[in-house]
Image (cartoon, rainbow, N blue to C red; front, top):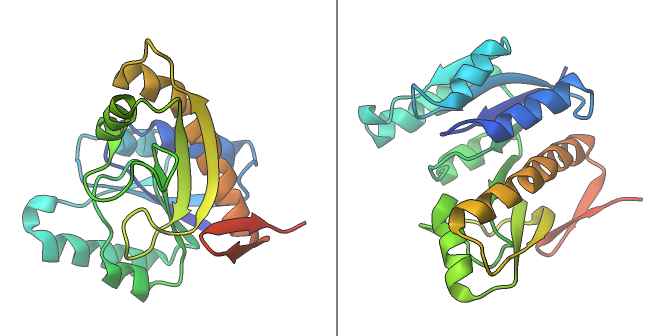
Length: 204
């Protein structure tokens, strides 16, 4: 069965949504491994509980050895798709160019707004609120060497409330993130799409 590798740094709520979707056959694939840069991450614990190979890559080894270790693991697994689900590190161009598997990323805003270097997690939600934007949401996109600039696969929209804090906005968008990731993984695996400019278009 097709293999998915998920990268995650934090609690792993998006990973759990992927695990659940695989179990319920909404994603027609298996999860080969979960890779995290935090040995105590919730993502690794969720992987272990679900019987999925959990891999800790230690960033204290230095950037070169850290990413070399990731490349070795990916070469060993040979995944069909790589999913960045709350992974707080930029994937080097070398990794993108050396593996045929598409790499997709979940971003907590409606790209191209509030994207780019330094824009992740609560930083994004804070900037959305500071801007006065009335709508936000999430984006799943293909990863390219330019940060947050790859073709958009799926976007989900949420209203921004006057009472919102970064935390409340994040909480309201999180279920949309889970929907978007699951939908995107299955679409990419199905290969039932084309890319037009900066957007993925579903066929049929």
